[in-house]
Image 1: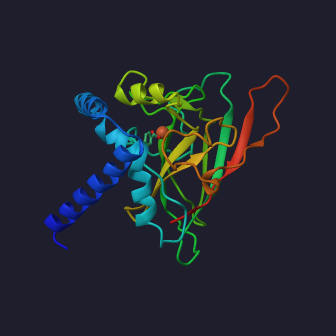
Image 2: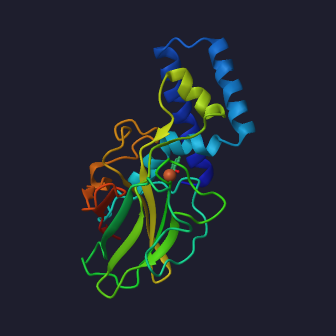
Image 3: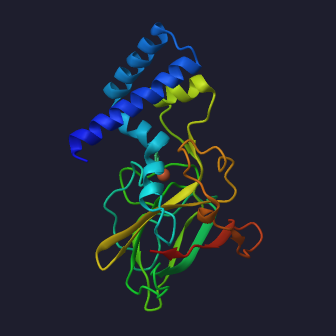
Length: 250
Ligand code: BEZ
Ligand code: FE
């Protein structure tokens, strides 16, 4: 199929499917024009790509990787940056909030096809703090760790939190109108590279999130990407600390 034929086929099928929706919900001409106005506002706000991510992009990722074994991929999202190496496995750029629950995340990186460990694999992590805020100016809770000679890695960080986005743009407007949360379930992003080649982009979810079953990114959360948090024994009155394990097969 040429590019032009594919585009024609996709357009025809999309219009056909949308006509079904118009018929099913008896959508009026005025409502269609309101939808057009919404799309104009969405475009002006620069959020068209984000709405595609929220509604559909993961379906494309799942189809593209369906026949591949290994860790389920997930969306990169808009907050990846160029991150520093963290030779000590410590993602802190400055001291965390004193009440931020600490997290030690460990695991292995193995080859999905052979099961062999992948020494030297690089894992690029980024996440929010315990209040659900990303550091957009610096590299706090961001950084790259390297797997050791047995493919093991260890990171010290904090437990991330749920966060809402798009409160002040047309995506938030849409979710408010539906009375649906525009909230991401607490997660840690990771990109795994081996020999300089990107092999996996995924997200690791925290089990305590109230949004695991209603993350506003359609299909983002799956059981295989949720870690268990085991409490670390800490002195009374000390900050809470947890450990979790996540193994990457790439
Ligand atoms: C995020 O985790 O930052 C994200 C991922 C996909 C869509 C929107 C946000
Ligand atoms: Fe995120």
